[in-house]
Figure 1 (cartoon, rainbow, N blue to C red):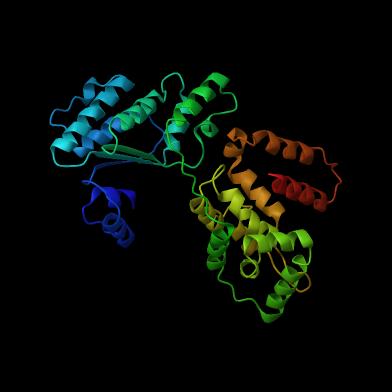
Figure 2 (figure 1 turned 90 degrees about the vertical axis):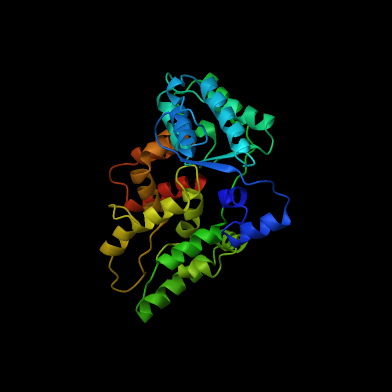
Length: 333
């Protein structure tokens, strides 16, 4: 959408076309579109500029430092303008992959080039724009063992950029879940689920939460998730640990032992209280599949406290005790 708006005189997307007509936007920019991977950022930046074919002389083999990368991009900006473009647009999707690589190889990789590019954008207003797309703040990609000096350095570099947070509402996620559940329940099971959800909504805190999020109707359409589990899908998959819709779809489609699909495949109902995918089931999935992210994430200490509490349960404790601890733990996060 951004590239369509800024890099075409007549955008393809109707909204971009309308924006370009109604807002004063200069000449189209030359796009350089990169997708992050676990590799050196400087190399990817040079490869992206080389692929644009803006520069007649390929001097990329002479690039040895972040300063060299910026000088090459400065030449790219001038070349784009001389060729009739308004300047250069650099978009890096999945930028967090580069941060992951940098966090694993701090002795070989630094982010100084970002500071140079940000300063360059200030020197070329409207002629050099840069957009980084990632799921969390820079420092969240660092391991717990990272030094305070390194964290401060990364935060300082992030401060060179203007941050635009994009969070989708709970109702968006729950609507996606409801669309993914194509169920034809037997009439007696459908009634049992409706009664169970209705009973849950009699609890004041549950009802207030559901009403405040505007998901009163959706809560009935997301069974066999228990209401709290359906609501928690939003904070669990919205960013720090996962990647929004991508991780949500992976969760719904996963055949892992503790996944939602596994629950559907292995659970039977023979009357009485209908089976639900509960908060404790969601906890099991998150810790099983996203364990590495949990260990390195900003809330790693709190996850460890939950695990420690579970480990301290007596061997003869009923399963309900473990489920209660998992539920309290996930709700507290």
